[in-house]
Image (cartoon, rainbow, N blue to C red; front, side):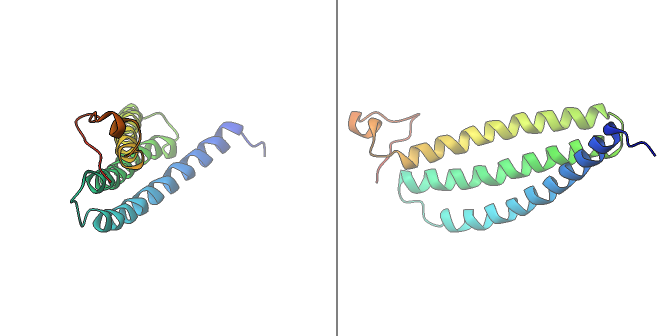
Amino acid sequence: KVIDDEDVFDGVSCFIDSYQAVLRFANVATAIVAAEHVCAVQDSDNQMARCSGAVNGIIYNLVIGVGVIAASISDCAETVTPPAVCTAFWSAFIGCIGTLAGTMSSVTQTCSGWYWEAARIPLNGVTTTL
């Protein structure tokens, strides 16, 4: 029997997308536990930035999880399913925006004492204090 490379690729793609969905939803659970710990006290801008980063981790994993489920629907059906592919692309786009938001929260927290502290300029309306 001749093995068709496209069939192998489709099978691998279906498996990877399905497995990624399981991992993303496991990450949602882990991110929720982390957010409970990190968001318990929010007395300073740093603590609020850490909490924001943790909450963005929940949102990111949830959105990307939905996206890989949508991608697996199309991949595992062995035919292009336009609504599923469209959902996967939009989920990836929204997930990237969530990543950017989480990164900015982390930068606000990590770099608090750096340029904008010395210049006394709030970064995007957030003043950073140690």
